[in-house]
Length: 306
Image (cartoon, rainbow, N blue to C red):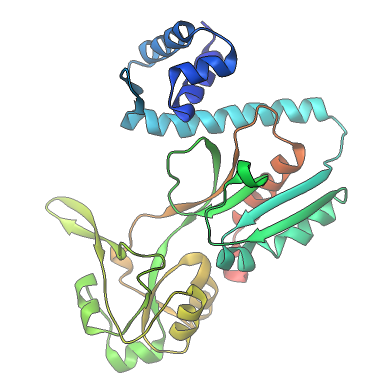
């Protein structure tokens, strides 16, 4: 049995959530799709899907395998597109979206630079903290920060995103430095409003037994705001400790304007992703844009320079 066809069938069933829907999309009988999945699980020696009469769900192994398969199939499609495109230049209109704060700082400056390389491409950039329906609203690609939920969208990890507690040297000199996350209750913490992000609180990795556990705390303080840039500005002005992403504070940390605290308790990083609808033939302009982002986000010193 074709190994690639097994992987394609697995991705189709997992993203559609239905054996019948995946079979109908390919124009084959559900039994054929089922045999491909059985063959894949038997070959790998692991259960990828839990199938009942009502629904299909991914196992833990299946969830991890799905992301790898989506990336592999995208790479194959990109390789084929590179060969078939030959000397054809990227063209057409590229519609991209990104979170407002991140997009202003790290995506918008790259857009003109991308077009300098691909003059036949026109670009629309949408900045919004709303989770945009890419297919429904006609977007080619989104940049998203944070763990990706199960989705029919294809995601490519562009960079790691780590969260840091930071403050100015002046603030720490005046108020001291927390030695443990629980010490934050004694400090002025600059927090997001409850109707914004960080509703679960600030995440820390703390020792437990012979290992560690991830805990979420909700420190308080006299100042909170729904806008991350305002919190950033308050923190730089010395009004307290903030929990911010490295993409927001890397430049200030590099210059010493902000100092990381509680680094030994930093939670594992999540990701910064390029996300696009699953397509058998990804437009060349989209593929080049994703490669362009991955290259620049991976450059040494990129985040500190922004």
